[in-house]
Amino acid sequence: MRVDPRKLGWRATGGCAYAQAIGTKGKEATMYTLQIEHGVKDFEMWKGAYGNDPLGRIRSGVLAERIFRPVDDRHYVVLDLDFASHAQAQEFLDRLRSDVWAIPSASPALASGPKTRIVEQVDGDSRA
Image 1: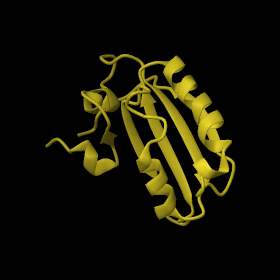
Image 2: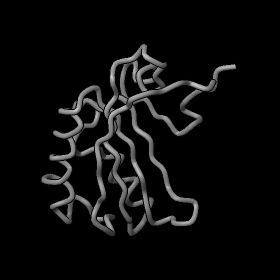
Image 3: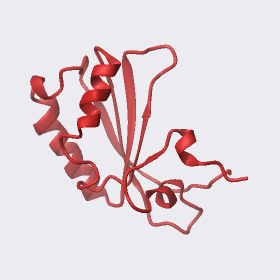
Image 4: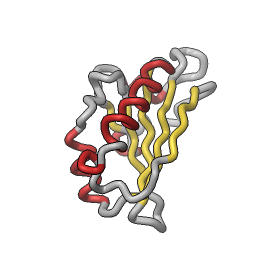
């Protein structure tokens, strides 16, 4: 039985992100994920600002995105944004730093400095 990835926290943002985000051993191109984590003053406020999508995630190459919250900290978020290339992930991160995080009015719910990294998928397998 296949499990719908939308029920696992995956949200496809474009065309065939579903298949690329899941990946299968050796059959998919390398995936690059921008991982972001930071504190938030108010999760609903943050979610609203994130939903406004000021940088245009799809237009910027985001194939899939996942939002997590630690079970013991309702004022912290962890995001995974998947891209087809390292350059796309880096460009998006640069724009986040200059156009969103550097401007308090553009990031009113941000409570702490974001921690970021870009990781490369080296293996993957769907268990469904």
